[in-house]
Length: 201
Image 1 (cartoon, rainbow, N blue to C red):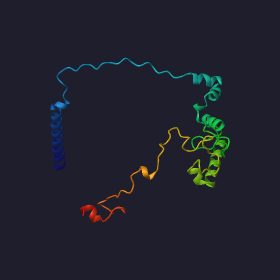
Image 2 (image 1 turned 90 degrees about the vertical axis):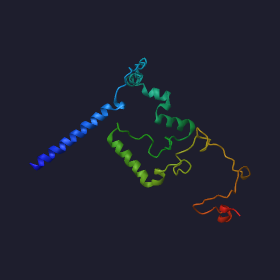
Image 3 (image 1 turned 120 degrees about the vertical axis):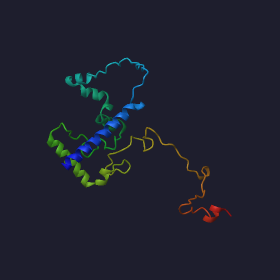
Image 4 (image 1 turned 180 degrees about the vertical axis):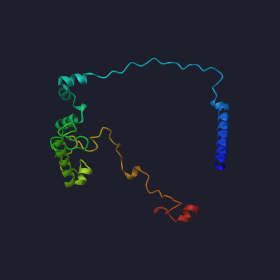
């Protein structure tokens, strides 16, 4: 009996608190709608419907996608890598050139024969185990295979689309030898006595 009486009093106290909180919220101005009628927002005209380019399906069903790929090699990464290899004698995206690649460059994809996928994967793992640093951190200038290269006649700077700013390191054109100051640590080696610099002579 004692337990049910305490439970009933606790529930009634909770209900009173909830009702009080609801009454306070209901009377707050922030939760009340404004008295003045609001103007309806201007409705913008609907945009034209977006339609899918169905020529992709038409060409795929007609078997003409490969021809379109030859006309526009930049539409796929493989086509662009081929184009750069043949015309610029360069590699693409830090990969080896297709004509010089260790794995033949054209490896099996997820839609190919599973045995081909597994054999290509094992070949890639064999190359990784043979030279893990060169595989994990490919570079062009330090490539041990020689299959990665900048376009013919280019170097790292000239091959970039956005060229870095040329800097003149002539010390006569720069302000050098200024002593630094650090109140929380070791003073600069170019500065004099710490006490003299801080408080003056």
